[in-house]
Length: 68
Image 1 (cartoon, one colour):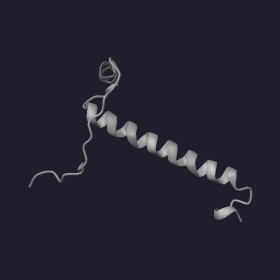
Image 2 (cartoon, rainbow, N blue to C red):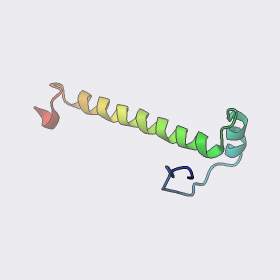
Image 3 (cartoon, rainbow, N blue to C red):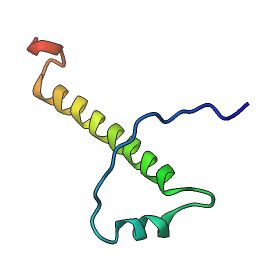
């Protein structure tokens, strides 16, 4: 039995010149560019999601959805 497919979506991305060389220099043992990029995207999603929640709480002094 083969490995179960876990990554279904693909998207091309244009990166600044030299970016892939910088990524390659930081890859861990056995880590691929795709592994690195998936981890970076997931990390950024977490960061931005937390910021969005924090900003929503800051805009509502009572901390309640819908402004009170």
